[in-house]
Image 1 (cartoon, rainbow, N blue to C red):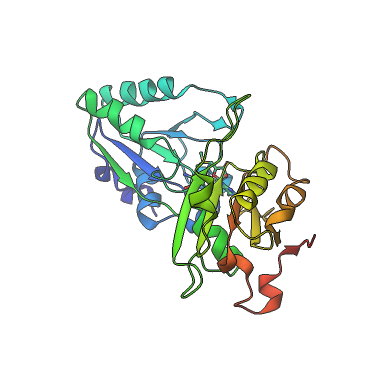
Image 2 (cartoon, rainbow, N blue to C red):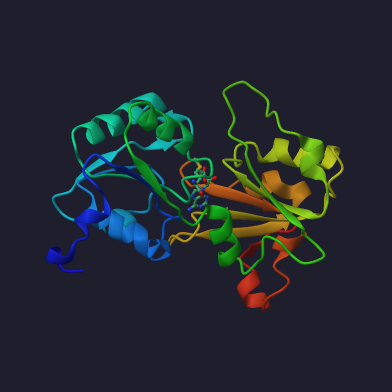
Length: 264
Ligand SMILES: C[S@@+](CC[C@H](N)C(=O)[O-])C[C@H]1O[C@@H](n2cnc3c(N)ncnc32)[C@H](O)[C@@H]1O
């Protein structure tokens, strides 16, 4: 795109776009997201927005990291809300870049509410959520006719010192796929609770690390081994857990489906 073609009008002055940046690979951005990034005067971005996506922000556009990573909240949500509001009130064209899809564990509702409470107009550009991208990387399907009739996305973010409070009986029901975000630290607890609530210990799992990035890793195994499967993953590496028969990856050529297979 030439500088003169930049579609500045896509964003009105004083308007905020919440834009899904996808799992990391800039080629997984929507075309609209790319145009919005080109049209922004200021971009606020999360820690999990891929470096290749940030490279698309034109030179001269102000970029503000409001990165939040598990256990290391560099900015509280309230101050992010205030920063967005202040930029919009100053009449700037604002893009708020969020990893994956803004509507999936992205705290976008709080930002929208804060902006709306002060009469600021906002809009949303969806993105590819990590569960979809992880399934694609593993040549798996999140649902599978006759095998997985549903998909449940859950966050297993642990609050310091508190046990995970999830509806284990509902999650353990067979016939569906679980996509567990922020679940690496709680992997052992997740595995124990699901099995205790009736999920088969042999249920296939796929642990997807740094999905769509050059250092992506896919580790396959079974539910009873989940704690072992995540043991070598560092705190720094974003990780998604996919659990269910559909993600076994047996529905595609073996060399594509394999990833890293660990059997316990
Ligand atoms: C705050 S949630 C945001 C989810 C995001 N809105 C989405 O739709 O994917 C952050 C969590 O998403 C997952 N995640 C995000 N990007 C990832 C990636 N590239 N690879 C693996 N997991 C990722 C991890 O579980 C991470 O801790």
